[in-house]
Structure formats: structure tokens, C-alpha cells
Amino acid sequence: MKYILFFLFLPFGLLAGPSQTVKIKTSAICEMCKERIEKNLALTKGVEKADLNLDDQSNITVVYNPDKIDVAKIKLVIAETGYDADEVKALKKSFDKLPNCCKK
Image (cartoon, rainbow, N blue to C red; front, side):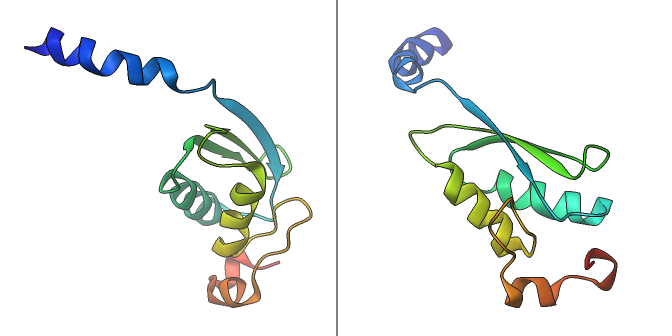
């Protein structure tokens, strides 16, 4: 039965385009920021993986499916979380809700 399901869904996996990777500079400053951004991106359709490196100038590397999401939308999700994402500024309403340790 497992093999039948595998072969039924195999064509759908082949139809998906290749993943792409983008690196975005954020205004994250601590582990709480990292967890918050990675969690929100993980819940975003089309995002396959997000890894924020606080030691690398707070850059986040995002692996995504370009058929489902684009870089502008990824930056918007980060901004809606309360953080700057390259040239996209954090939404004030979201930034104001962040803990004081996450504001610079």
C-alpha cells in the first residue's frame, strides 16, 4: 500500500519547481528575535527553510519555492513580524509589540 501511495504522489513532487535561496539582512539582535522570525517564516506557505545567523550581521537565509512565494512577500512577513528586512522597514504596530530587548 505504501508503494502505491508513493507512485501516486510522485508526479506531484516532480512538478514542483526547484527551490531558490535568498539571504536577507534583518534587524534581529537576540535569540528571541531569531526564534520569532524563523517561526513566522516556517508557517508561511512556500517557505521550506529559514535560518537566521546572528553572528553574520543578522542575515537570514531562506529556502523557498518560487512558484508559491517571492522575495518581496518573504520580506513582508519579516516586516510584519516587527523587523527590518533589507530595504523593507518593520511595521510600527508589530515593532511596538516586541519585547524591549528586541528593539534597537
